Image (cartoon, rainbow, N blue to C red):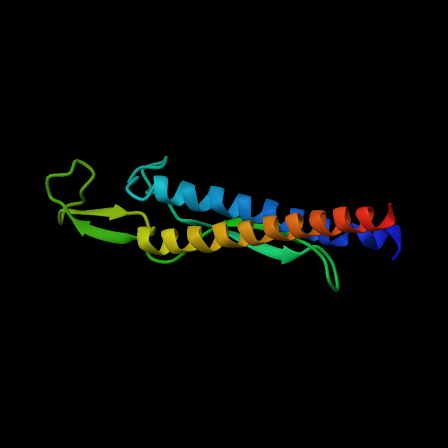
Length: 134
């Protein structure tokens, strides 16, 4: 096995962990701002999503290509007592659905754990190989 190919699994796992870490950071931001009706400029917070892509052709790692706002419709809630309410008594809320974000957080967390498990198995394999060579 060529030296440059030997560290392929490590590079792939580390890139996956970095991408999932960024995804969890974005999801956490979405959850934290689920009720933010003024995120600046009088507009409510808009949910963010991480766009992941392969680092290059073939078997390779993953990277966060971009973080983009989710352009789905914002929620309108009837709350006539709210100072931010319009003439009909509605306020515009973020397009964040906390249960969906919690599911996304769980998926990202499991993917992170899977990449960490690959690193542990690779380390164990290298240790076993070194023991056999002694």
